[in-house]
Length: 315
Image (cartoon, rainbow, N blue to C red; front, side, top):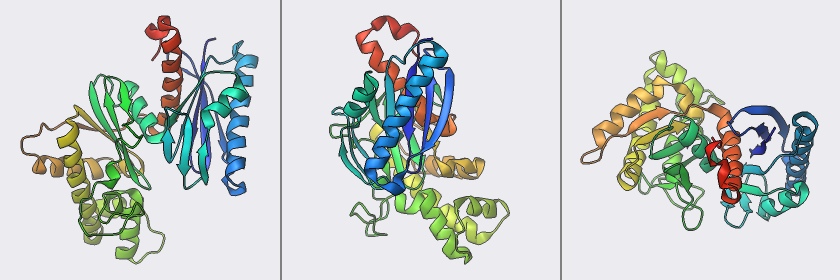
């Protein structure tokens, strides 16, 4: 069966799949990145995992994968195929596309993890059918993906969609990027966790605990949560003003709070817009499979460049 390799590399673990032309997950697997052994070991784990996936396809699906797609965190130069920098993995300027192509003997597409996940959400997830969408992941940090007509815009230098570094509180909390008052210092899952641990006096309390406390009526939790909602709405309205998306998709760990997040967020965004059109604000639909599915889409897209006949069967 014709298929592609899809590999989603995270800080500590990798998710992978063999994906058919109709988007079917034909095989799924997970493996540790081995980051505790250093960046060279991480690269070798990726190469070895991809080679094992190719071998599995030959053994169980009757042929080699036609292409591979891989998404990685950090700074990515997709055009040159470079994994430029990732703090959690410790690598710099790794020619990952070339290394994978050499190991597999296949064409390889490389993408940024959030933009790749956004591609999947926009094309086959919560944004399906929207000509323009903006995907925002609320995790350890905050990042976004700008979708136009089924594609994700990387920008001239690969930094498009970095909504987490919109300054929403000028002169506020320092951010590792060098600015003060960035959105992700107030509305990411890690920022909410930090604020709730301090407010509750419970070391190790996290954003999920805060959401539960909000639901139970704790006024301290409500204040922490509302501060994050207000900052998030300020940042999102700036993004909406610039991008004018039809659908705004919210994913990441904080989105798992469901209506506890989305009900006040929709209200806060509505209160802030003036001339802008309010987009549909929807929770991400694909969960932790988004990155893997997006990597598969990158691989199929790569094949359609050389074989236009595949367009009709590509998800």
